[in-house]
Image (cartoon, rainbow, N blue to C red; front, side, top):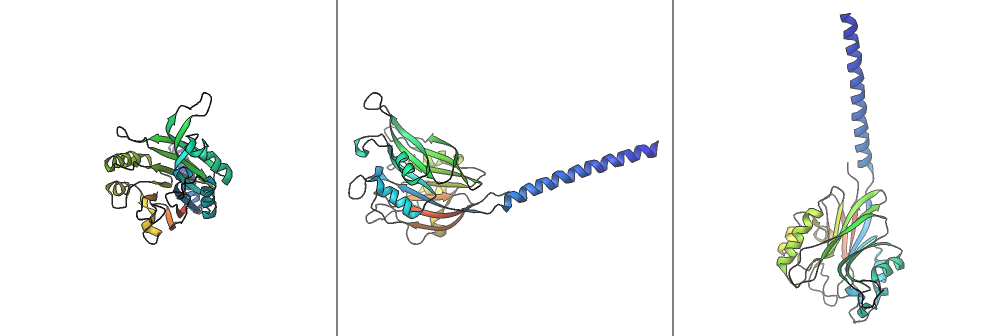
Length: 282
């Protein structure tokens, strides 16, 4: 009886060990499958379009579309985008117009949201947009800290599926005339961009690289320009640029291959294009 009991226990232990081996093997296979997914190459751009008013002070949304099309951007963070805002942009929904023109997906973050001038008309909105050649899985817009009398700013997020690899893309436009407010906005952004998936942050940050708010953001993400850009990277003003205030930041697991500022007369800012490699890491 004792021998039979010992045999049963031995068989049971062997069964448990076999299950454990299967679980470990399965977990290892899953991890290897995730790490074996090849990195995806994407071109990301950030562009403050100044509601499509170019250096000649003329409204021309087609010029903005041409910049994005010619630059072959896959994902674009746009700032200063009107949506039925006013006569300055002919009350157009600029984000939807560009998405349709370029055959891209779009999400829009309305940081200013006002009643229409006439009953029944669309709401008047002003904010940021993200255009993407790849599907958007989900998105949201978070309002950032604002000082009294200043413009409301926001952080627009879109989770984008890049050929099987989800990427968290953020777009923002920080306060232009108050460094302390920008620093508070960056501190609010930092926990929001702390994600396990690859992260890309594009935006007009209205601060030079040596500013405290840019150094603070660099605690969480990495500035793409020093890694792959050549020259000063100045993006503002479009005519005779002398300041680098438009950025693409990434999480450390994203590889930056190249970065370039493109000449354009479509806005008072120059667009920045960055080539990235993103992957699913087990």
